[in-house]
Length: 124
Length: 227
Image 1 (cartoon, each protein chain N blue to C red):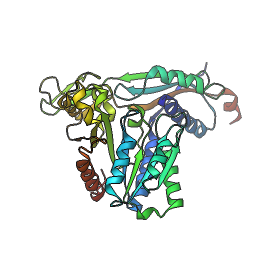
Image 2 (image 1 turned 60 degrees about the vertical axis):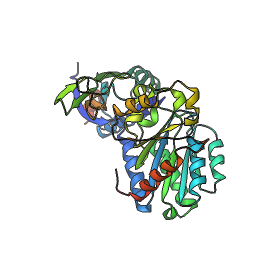
Image 3 (image 1 turned 90 degrees about the vertical axis):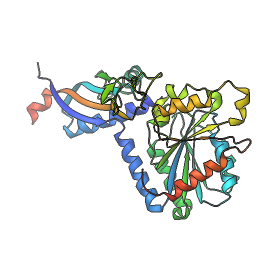
Image 4 (image 1 turned 90 degrees about the horizontal axis):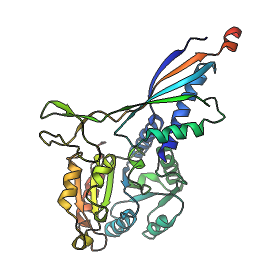
């Protein structure tokens, strides 16, 4: 259910950006980065986005979600490894605990693809 | 055809919540209150733990409770019997407290009481092992509960909750003789991702471990260094 809240946050952030452009941008695509070591399920996010943007300036905008794997760094072995979520988090070689997460916690709006609205271009 | 442009935003989706949490923490610091965020799955025993804690402390620490509950005030009413202020927040359909809801709770606390008299605010989050882990509310310390009936694998399945906890209470220890549960295994699973967490086995029913828990609380209140 928290995907609904995440989507609200996403829409508000994009709306701020949209207003800052003077409502002129025709948004085509929003790129998100969602780490595998977060509580967010990309499919639920897609669904919530489609529902919550109906009849708004974001209706029909594509949401592109890039997932990033969980990568940890073991300071004993001086090497990165891929913890197995739900199974094994400590270093597979020396069993040191997972302490330094290098990837997988991302939850961000990366960038927006847009076109400038032709009608307003001629006015300004 | 119009050219497609790109704008780089690189904004965290939880940015607004995090800002709110930082503001709440600053307000709490100003009032001299340490804040705990108490989290667990539904039925792990958060409310009964609080009841026993309040009974045992018997006013030694000035505590205010912020109680998150989806629809009822049942938990809040139980805790009010101990003579402490309980601010109930109904989260509606939301499965966690967020920093905005807790800001509202703090506002009510300051409106109804002199907030500077409190040493400790305990936020009892909505029972859920997933969402509360992502939404900081302004706490200084996170406390997770895991009842031993839930199984050894839960820290592996819900790692975020256990990875961020400063203290983990293993509850319902009185049931241990009736279960095929390996307490050491739970601890080992948690320490894979959180080696420094304080783990305390407790039973609200028999009182086992409550002294150690209350001692941890006292040191948490005294140690006002921000985490």
